[in-house]
Length: 467
Image (tube, rainbow, N blue to C red):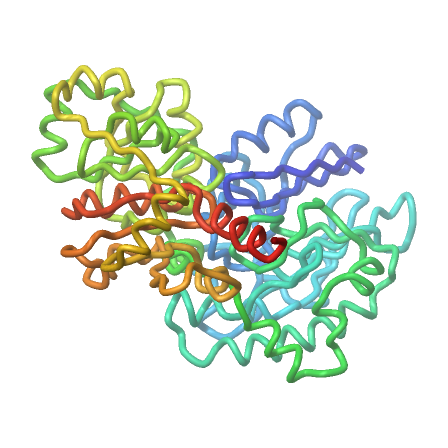
C-alpha cells in the first residue's frame, strides 16, 4: 500500500493519496483545488489516479475533485446521504453507509457519520494482502485529533436556522458508533490546528480510535447528551464569511480551473485605472513593512497561513481585485486564493512599484505601547476596540473595551467613534494591523494600533498579581 498525506498549512486542510502499488492505481481523498500536487505524486510513484473520494460537502475550501477527475478520468465517489439539500448536482458515483469501494487490493468501507453535516461519511480502509482487519479511518470533519467537527456552521455561516441542535444530536450518535471501532485503527482527519471547523484541534497529524477514547473531550461526555451538546456548541470560533459560498460551489456544477493561472504584472497606467475603477487593493506585506509606507485605501492582509481565510472575509465572488506582492510570492498567493474560489485576481504590483508609482502619496504609522495605552486610559474619553473573537474576549480583556471582531469590522463601522481617540488591538498584533488598514480605508483618522495587544497587556496583569 502507498500512502501520502498532503497538508495545506494555509487552511490547515489534509488530503490523502492512497495507492495499491500492485495494481498501480491510487485514490485521492478530499483533494484541494490546485491538483497538480496529486498528479506529481502519482507520476513519481508510477500510479494512475482512478478514484476520488469526498467525506462531505466542504465549507472551508473549494474541492478539487472535479478538476482532478477532468484531468485524470478518475471516478468520483460522493455521499448520497442527507436530504435533497445535500445532494451533489453533477455526475458522480453515489455512495451510502455500508457501501464498499474496491481499488486493487484495497477496500474503503463507507460509514455514515452525520453531525458536522448530514451527509458526512468516513472511509474505513483495509489493506487485504496484509490483513483482513481495517487499518485506517479517514474521518474528514467528523473526528479530529482531540476534537470533533462543529455542527453549527450551517446556522452560523449559511443562515440555515435550527440545524445546529440537530447536528449536535447526530454527532452524539455518530461518536457512539465511532467508539465501538477497534482501538488500534489509525484516524486520519480532514483538518489540524488552525482550522475554523472545530475549536480545539490538535497539531499532531493523526491519532487512533483508542487514543481519542481517552483524550478527546467529546468522547468523555458520551454518557451525558445535554452536557455534550452544551460543550460542543460553546465558544466555537467565528466561521469565515466565505464558508457559505463554499457550501454552494462544492455542490453545484461550476467552472473548472485545471491549472494555476498566470497573473499579470500591472503598469503604472494599469494601476491608475485600477484605483479609478475602485478595485480592492490588498497589500500582502508583513504589517511592520506596511506601516512604514502604505497607500491609503489598501487592505493589509499579510501573506501567511491565514491569508486566504482573511481574504474570504473581505472579498466577494464577483469583484476583481489586485495584490501588492513580491513577484516570487505571486504563485503561492494565487494557489491560496484558488483554494477558496477567489478567481478574480486582476493583477499585481510589487512593493518597489508601489513606491515608484505613489511617490509622495504613501502614509505611515507607528504602533503605540502599553505605557501610552495606560496614559490615554487615564486621560479618559478614549474608545478601546478589541478585534479578537468573542470567545477570546470572554476569557479576558481590557476593562471597558468594546469587542468588534475584525472579520465583521466593515459591517460595524458605525460602532467606532470618529470623534474621540480610538485604540485598537488583538492578541499580538496581526489582526489589529488588518483592522487598522480597514479603518483607514474607511476614513478613520483617529485610530492608534496597540500592537502588543492582549498578550502584552495580560503580562501586566500577571505582574500586578505577582507583586
